[in-house]
Length: 158
Image 1 (tube, rainbow, N blue to C red):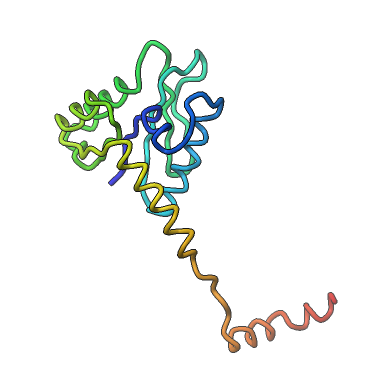
Image 2: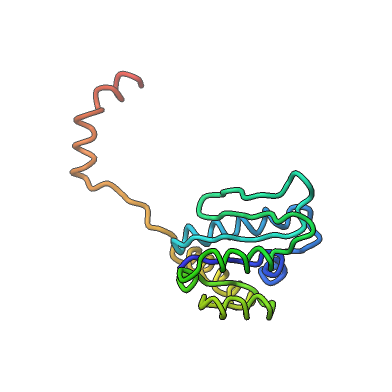
């Protein structure tokens, strides 16, 4: 199930600072890792984009929406839920803002608080550190096969 995320609501919950100049891009990097580990898709909304900087940008499985000044991320999420119609029930909205949660429930979307989602992200990252993907090693037969194919070329270059 993909996520619609209220970005500035999540930033402090994930351990980042809203006062950092690149807080939004730091969150996008964390969300990209989460998407890779969990095979999920995320649309994250940030409000307060200066003129000329608003719009959508794709970062792998993360699409960041930079909402123009004068409009809020809450408004953009509400609008997106309306456009999704019945398909909204296939999405999870991440926000601790009660109005955003109420809009999500009204659209029949799942809803997760920013705190709970931050814990999910942290758990996914920790699980990856504890159980990194095993490196594949070649069997002796596979090594022999590769040596037959490339052995002469390796010997010539050395």
